[in-house]
Image (cartoon, rainbow, N blue to C red):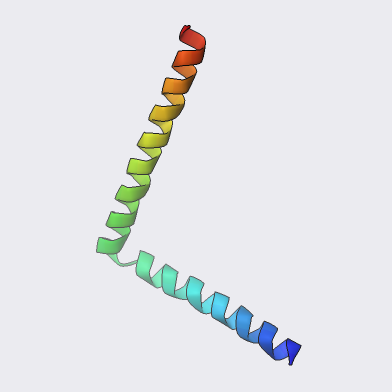
Length: 58
């Protein structure tokens, strides 16, 4: 029984990654996700620059 559960879990994980790969290939969805990642990147880098500027500039 334990082997069947592990096998099912492996198949489920592979299926999830497969579905995510298919969804990421859809141009509209990929554009939205890319925009979210870009906005998050700019926000985090702005915070890091502010912290470093406050530490070094003072």
